[in-house]
Amino acid sequence: MALSAFPLFFSLLHIALLSTLCFAGDPTVYSDLRFSYITVSPLGVPQRVIAINGKFPGPVLNVTTNNNVIVNVKNDLDENLLVTWSGVQMRRNSWQDGVLGTNCPIPSKWNWTYQFQVKDQIGSFFYFPSLGLQRASGGFGPIIINNREIIPIPFAQPDGDIIILIGDWFTQNHSALRATLDAGKDLGMPDGVLINGKGPYRYNNTLVSDGIDYETITVDPGKTYRLRVHNVGTSTSLNFRIQNHNLLLAETEGRYTIQSNYTQFDIHVGQSYSFLVTMDQNASSDYYIVASARFVNESLWQRVTGVAVLHYSNSKGPATGPLPDPPNDFYDKEASMNQARSVRQNASASGARPNPQGSFHYGNINITDTYVLKVLPPETINGKVRATVNGISFLKPKIPFRLADKHKLRGIYKLDFPSKPMNRPPVMDRSLINATYRGFMEIILQNNDTTIQSFHLDGYSFFVVGMAYGDWSENSRGSYNKWDGLSRCTIQVFPGGWTAILISLDNTGVWNLRSENLDRWYLGQETYLRIVNPEENGETEMAEPDNVLYCGPLHSLQKEQIHSGVGTFGVSLKIYTLLLALFSAMLI
Image (cartoon, rainbow, N blue to C red; front, side):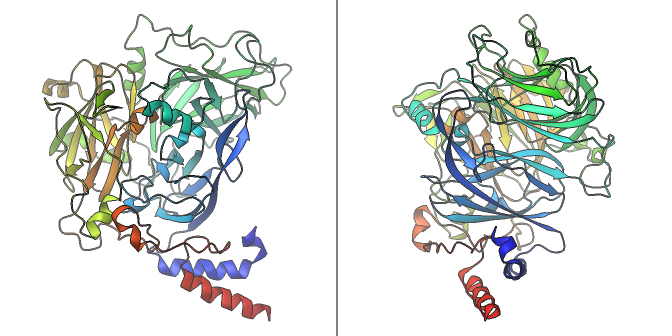
């Protein structure tokens, strides 16, 4: 690696970099992520997947609260790339968010460097490519944001961290899946579920082909591990369970929860959870780890099941017998919803800061704006099948919105997103929510689609205060949890139901509100919150970075990238040339 071969050179490089950044005092973590294609056969069929540094899934980004993070991304794909850091709240810095409304795409064979600070955060998250269903082909990896040493965690230090990435999987790549959606067709049933990029253990000789590589997680008896589980799939809610073991829920997307035991847990697309699992069973055999499809016809979807093996270090035999039973709630429509309602925030635990997180009394704050966002099944607009929110199917941006603002471009977007469903034909448009800086917004996610939906908001955590079946009304506020509702960034909305969230709008920028179901997102089920301080003086929102990319109406401003091979971390050509001269002089 270049860093070890040229330590003095790169030390100077880092010093030069840090002198150009606004990061003051806090440690800096560096990472290089190279996105490329490799061929693997997770379900027994060779296919091209997106790997990171040659691995599928990608490496963990392990950082600590307040760390400055510098990630150099190399795009070795044959198409544009953007990487988004799902759940990482970039204070005042939507320029690094990695979606089309905030960043121009990284062209094929180019480098681009993300620079941001993980401020006032802890917890479990993941990163992934945000363009054109690329996540359906891989390119994802976990993010861990650790507590600072002075901040205690609300449980005994686990004996180890175990990362588990689960998700539905198609043997067709993202390009073929895009073509299916472009043709107005549904993606249909996935071909399986992967656990850490691998197919199922052969628990059933009929359903699982021979020779499929499966994940084995080795543990020591009597120890307690923190399992960080992420649903990185395309569109399928999954039920997670471990044979004969309890799951003690401890953290969800950056917030510690009241610790509760579950034998199984529903994890929806885009969601992340931490469980404490004690290895308290005997070692007569290994145990199944299962992620199976939810809210589907189980007999038809039986093969859409991920199975890994929990292996005790002193195990005496393989896992055998039937898988642990999935939830039996055919006659209990509200079972999964009641499970979601049972997840509460631990108001007495510290998070990123030493003061208790429960000190934010969100239930006593006056709501300044209410938006009822309604989704329906995809419908045809101008001859194309599209997904909508309040009758608007979002058109992909041609240029990041704040970049357009800085260059005073007109006609790029509208600030007229309706606050409630409109009685009019659906349209395709580029309409943003004009959110009030330092306002306190109530958003009702009303799902009149036929499938369960996940929604995610970049740049923020929001308080989940209510969910129920039926149509939301103002009387529904009487059922809100105003005391210990969970603060998170991704939430499910059950079909024929609603979910209510509250957001304190203190983070300036333009932030993506979207469906995490990749098919619905691709078809236009998203918008953005534009949050601008009217008295902006450079202190509440960062300026565009020095290495900002240009596209669309500003593409003529983009200079050709010089591929030096060592000019990483977004260093300017001028600085690179100076340091190269210094390094050359040292060799004389």
